[in-house]
Image (cartoon, rainbow, N blue to C red; front, side, top):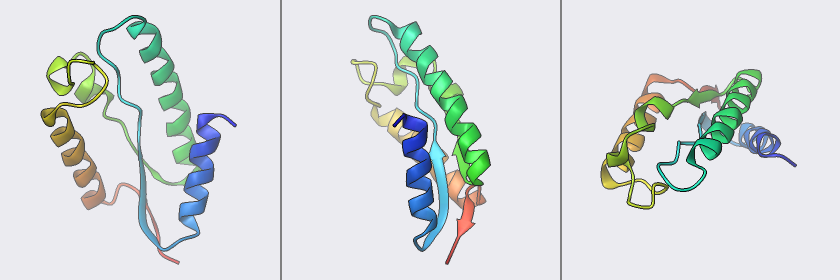
Length: 108
């Protein structure tokens, strides 16, 4: 089962519970390291599929790629894990999305 199918399965399970909103965040880019371009191209392709699935399932999708791509200050030295600044941006953007009601509302 591919990652998009796993996300779809998760969304459908969440819809069956008493959930206020469902918002999925796209996969963030990586910084540096061998194969960075290839890995980021794969991540972008997956994000496009996940975003399409979110539209089909009528749930929110949060695209933060532009906030993180090329921003070394958002990452720890390993180029994968978020720095304090990156974590703060992620949290802030998620909060904005929740407060604006970006995700579909599912109250059973």
